Length: 120
Image 1: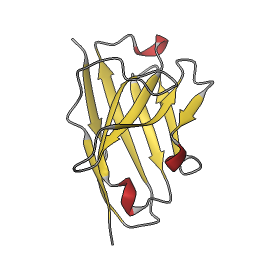
Image 2: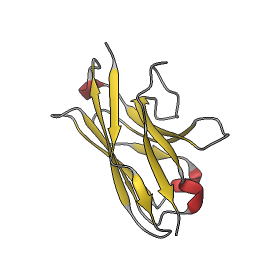
Image 3: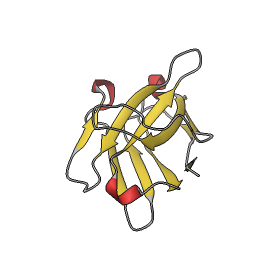
């Protein structure tokens, strides 16, 4: 059974940083590209970033390029997202999933997400 458990969210001031994590189970983590998605209130879920299984390639949506960095620990089945220079428009619930480098989510099952709120 596929399960994603996201954690690490919280309240952050504009310009601040946060690292969130996703623990994956039921997925052959080390052989698949993985990605982060987010959903703001009243908006559709959108893709944020993806990383290849071998950690050689990463891709980002334009709005986070240069500010966010995706990484992974294949030994522990954990996906990370380091978020710097956070803006109020980054406020959203963040989710992980198996995903293509182009931003397509593979599973229809989602975790509970972790809420990141950027506000002063």
